[in-house]
Image (cartoon, rainbow, N blue to C red; front, side, top):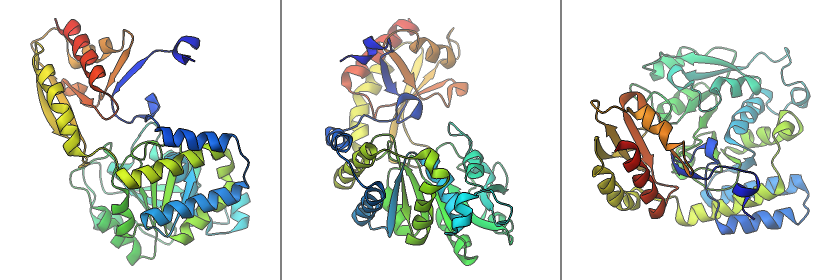
Length: 365
């Protein structure tokens, strides 16, 4: 059944990357089969949640894991779990005034809007966001001086959305947290190398299940058993409003097996696929095209197309026109104000690359 036609939906070419606004990833057949098994069978859900988490944790070498319905839900539930510390009273009264140790410290340059504000998820979990440092810098000292008797945890956000320069490392943030007997929560939703953060000993690590892992809509929390247990309790608290279905739990489990076996597409392969695409783009008028590595340091390579400033159309106009005809073409728009359009090829094939080039020929003529 063609749901594009049935629901009158636009067909999309996703040269933007693994973006929530476009449905994130294409799911492999193994995950679809696992989802179908989940759809057609019954389980004791607490048993499924606990055992799927332990199975995933064993595959990656973590103490424990928990599948939730999104990375955002993971932040809120992890914050709530750490504030409650296993208290059943807190579970049913998450915003109680009895508990005052609620401050969640994060670098100011990481208090981002990734589609929803980071601080909103902290507040949803009952935390009080406290910014450390400044918009353009945060050191371990800046982080440490914000700790007080009401600090519950430190949050570090590893994302291309964040300020990258003059920012303390995850290892430095972890050292500060542990010196003060605090857990470090790491929001690594779109990161590619999951094992790196597990091996580093981060207490709570939150990933999107649908990005690097390429699973169905879901989130994954890995980390220390105590914190995962506290977070798992939230299924009877605020997590009830964020519950995940059995089909997506099994779909993510299958996707994670594939991730561990094969990993995401590596940079070398991306560069090979990019080469003919960059060559074709470079033949277009009024543009210059280069290969660019992900600015946040991930092993991801993209095509950066800069529009000649003397041309009558700027990058913002070209991006708009790419979305005006079916199939609509989405690109990375973060540097449009610099007159640069970025093309992320992780979710597109050669035929779609040719369609992009053809459309740009029409727009730039």
